[in-house]
Amino acid sequence: MQLLYNSDSFAVLLIGLAEADAAATGRGGFEIVDKFARKGIFIEGAVAKSFRDGVQALIDGGSPSQDMLDDYIAGYTTLAQQPVHLH
Image (cartoon, rainbow, N blue to C red; front, side, top):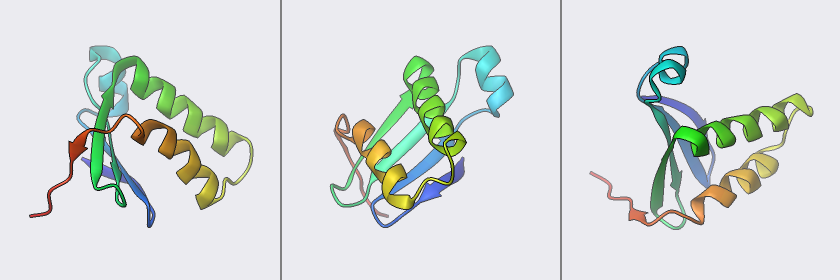
């Protein structure tokens, strides 16, 4: 597990195998946590690839602001149903 992004609103973690292994085996994905809604979602497969490609497009377009990244991530958290429990 590797923390990829952390803002006041969201956290994005890479879960599972290294990227090269994940591409070969189809395993691994991203966990996205909406800190305000206190909900999270795990995405894998084609959805995870789409998420990664979208983030890469933002980066390739220049230095994206935190607001730009948060707005993009928010599009995925609308699907989040799993409540986050702090231990």
